[in-house]
Length: 285
Ligand code: C2E
Ligand code: MG
Ligand code: MG
Ligand code: MG
Image (cartoon, rainbow, N blue to C red; front, side):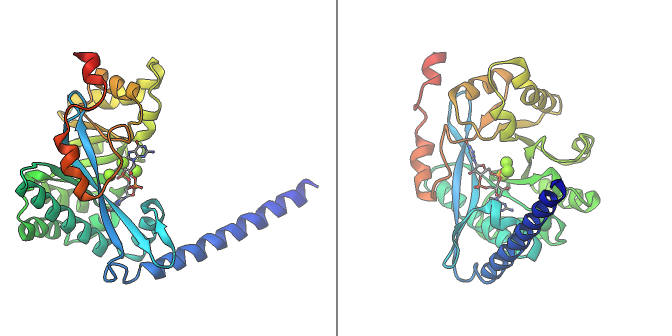
């Protein structure tokens, strides 16, 4: 009986693998030319200074509406675009959009840093540094207003990636490690990598529950950042208690649904202007 159950499980597993492969292939096909057909938009999520809740930066987050598949989340389509190589052109488009948008905000008197996700595949491109600096040139955005976010898993061919990041950083663009603490890399690379910001992964923020155990990882990352003189941005803050704990741990910045979801560009000016909303300031006053 056990053997039959095992076989059945295997058959279901194999069928779902095939389904997954077929679905990926369909998405890959739909992604071809999606950029030219104007199917992408960019949303922006505020990053706040935790102590004041002032919006200091925004993260550019890609959205895809496929006429065939509807709204597809980046968690779903970016890995597919990564495998097909389409992410290189799509990523460059996001970068240019974000820089152009930041220039428009600056012209309206709103001085924000914009952060852009760069995928592992883009980091392998010999043209990456040229493409990033080209986007700044073409849009006129000062390098200090741009942050490039990379993940630990992107560090597959360290020498190549470090060289590209060094060039970008030498021009004044800052580098953030996204989802910090979730990758496979040893901590050693932190001392070799040109880096300015650590983004504390939201899984560690979700563990904050007022206990020493709950805050252990977030606290360790903040301490590490302090020693290396890096800024920390805590991701995925959904509750007041998490924001308060992060302030106590010494994390300067945060991002999450508590402050704002990702929104269209035209919503950002009102959010950036509003420095007085919600309770923490009243508590601390
Ligand atoms: P990420 O770079 O770590 O971005 C943060 C993700 O967390 C976003 O998901 C954001 O909507 C979500 N988030 C923010 N605050 C909260 C919160 O309080 N609670 C919860 N549960 N989630 C929160 P999104 O927009 O679905 O993007 C998912 C991932 O897709 C991103 O993770 C990033 O790795 C990738 N991605 C998005 N846009 C781009 C892009 O333009 N290029 C590349 N290469 N990757 C992108
Ligand atoms: Mg990110
Ligand atoms: Mg992240
Ligand atoms: Mg993530």
